[in-house]
Amino acid sequence: MDVYFDNAATTPLYPEVIKTVTNSLSQYYGNPSSTHAWGRKARSAIETARKEIASLVNAAPQEIIFNSGGTEGINAIFYSALKDLRAERIITSKIEHHAVLHSLPKDNPQIQIDFVNLLNDGSIDLDSLESLLSTSKKKTLVSLMHVNNEIGNILDIDKVGALCLHYGALFHSDAVQSVGKLAIDVKLSQITFLTASAHKFHGPKGVGFMYLKKNSGLKSFILGGSQERGIRAGTEPVHNILGMSSALKLCHDHLDDNHQYISKLKNHFFEGLVDIFEKPQINGICRNSKNSLPNICNVTLPMDEGKAQLLSFKLDLNGIACSHGSACQSGAGTGSHVLKQINNKSKYYHPSLRFSFSKFNTIKEIDYVLEVLKQISRN
Ligand code: PLP
Image (cartoon, rainbow, N blue to C red; front, side, top):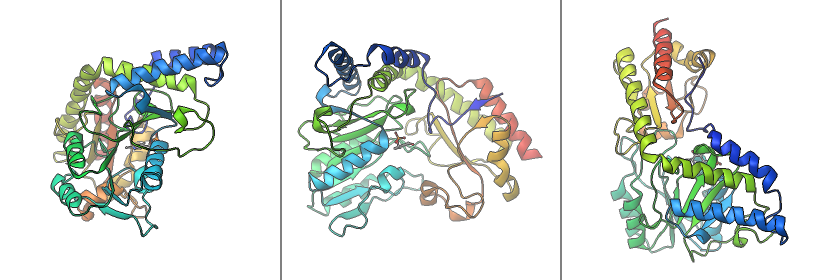
């Protein structure tokens, strides 16, 4: 049996999205910037997609800018917030995605970088955020992810947005793991900038969007033509944009059903893990259904080092895809920067695995993976 439990890395496309993409490749091949009928047809399709996406996050269509995905969006926002908006300070956390951590201007002494404290379970300490915000009058960009891609913790973006508004800071949220899985209202959460990526919600790869609050003043990162209101140059990939819009619409049509279904999968998985391992270590707050995304389950399994080193190899041999981009299993790698922040270092040799689910997974698949884990732990 082949089981794909690596949906936080990327997701399979909805069949409907594949149809939308393939149809649009033949129907909308005109350049959306051309003024002739072919161009106008492509332009109109893009603008319809923009309206659709905007309505799903409660933004205005002109606040949605299409791009190539999460990494580009994050780089663009950091670049322009520092250069054009003259931010002098960034507040973020040490468990952000590398797209954020590697975009920090560490070599620029003029930009102050502060990291919020984390609670033991990897949650952001909002008191620490407030105290950082209150200690300086410098123009500040706060960048905190909505859902952590390794451990699934959900950040209370409403609270962060309210704090940022109160202290006059810009608020960027990397919502790559939450868009399409959680309801997001950019206005309610007082978000200034948000980044999203279609391949994490059953859409195509190489396309995403940024929400840039009206009049935020953010400028272009990629230079060239005047596409995307001059903020993101380059001919728009019409098929990808339409695929993204169709994927997001499908996710939102089934947001609650999917959430409930995937929560059931995760609970079943946990119960099985406890039966086999008695005390699997849960990384983050995976068992807290309110503050953790059901799609992500990060666990450290109690096994001796020898077995631990072979675990992901054996899972792969048995047709199971999950992610071990976490604990330093060989002793030679650098391990997960997220788990390093939240776990006791002595446990590093244990195998830490991220299993991530989608609506396309089944209880039968969970049972198969549990059976394989049982065999591995016994042999
Ligand atoms: N941010 C988070 C939280 C992610 O999980 C990812 C992808 O793994 C990214 C950013 C980067 O997104 P993309 O793959 O669209 O560049």
